[in-house]
Each structure stands twice: as structure tokens, then as C-alpha cells.
Image 1 (cartoon, helix red, strand yellow):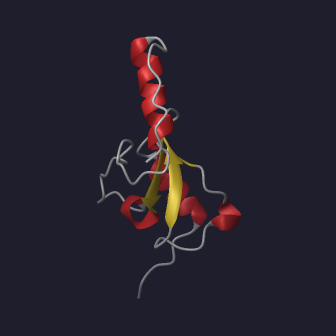
Image 2 (image 1 turned 90 degrees about the vertical axis):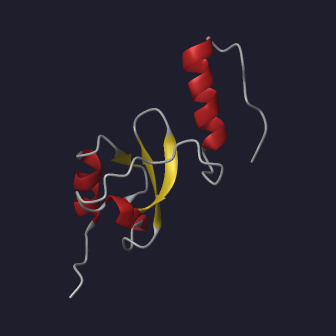
Length: 92
């Protein structure tokens, strides 16, 4: 029988990876859905099941072209490393 993971289970698993969930508890249904996570700097849309237990040591792909937050992540990176000299304005 498959275990039904709660929102708190997911929060704790993400916290053990130094990640936080942005998706609100009332929006969470199950581990098959996409959730938004952050490391405090970058954001990513990921599948919840990849982060529910310790066996999956995945790091979110912050700069993946399919990540809807990629432009913001690139701009944060550029601001941190190039003193706001560059800005990525293109949309994926």
C-alpha cells in the first residue's frame, strides 16, 4: 500500500535539503503534482515525489529552460555576480 504523504512530510523532507516549499498547504494534493520550491535565492517548479524521501538527493534545476522562474533566477545570478551590470530581459 502506498503511503499518503502530508504537506508536513514534504516540508520536512525539503527542509532536510535546505529547501523551502512556496506552494501553500491548501494547494497541495499529492506527490504527483508540481510544487514551487526555493533555496532562499532561486525558485523552481518541481515534481513533489522527487523530494519526499531521503533516497532522492535531487537538487532543483534552477536554470532549466522549462522552469518558469528561469529569467528571475538568471537575473538574481547576474545581480549577485556582476553588480547589476547585466539584465536578462528575454522570456522563455
